[in-house]
Image 1 (cartoon, rainbow, N blue to C red):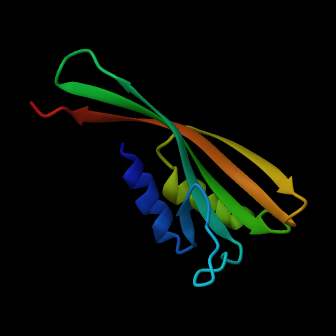
Image 2: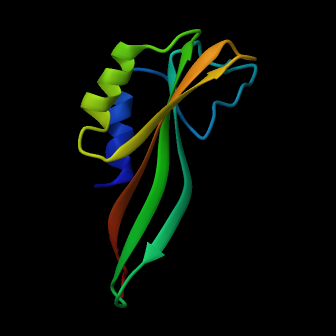
Length: 116
């Protein structure tokens, strides 16, 4: 499994998608919910020889919705984006933004061949 596979699946949902956060500018205002953000806070490299390295990638996919959770979007993420990935799901209300965050944390492993 590659992280890009998860990102590509999320793109197919048709929601605005950003890495880490949306950056508001004059030309690009913040999107109206619902939208997705993916976060990759840590990549750990492991390997037993000089040629193959295993990346352990701790990541999260976050769904932001306006005022209430959207069960149909959550189901779509679970069935079409993360269907073959073990994840931990949690929700939090962001009262200051009048939004709900549904986060999916997961770990994937990518084999990387070193050139040489």
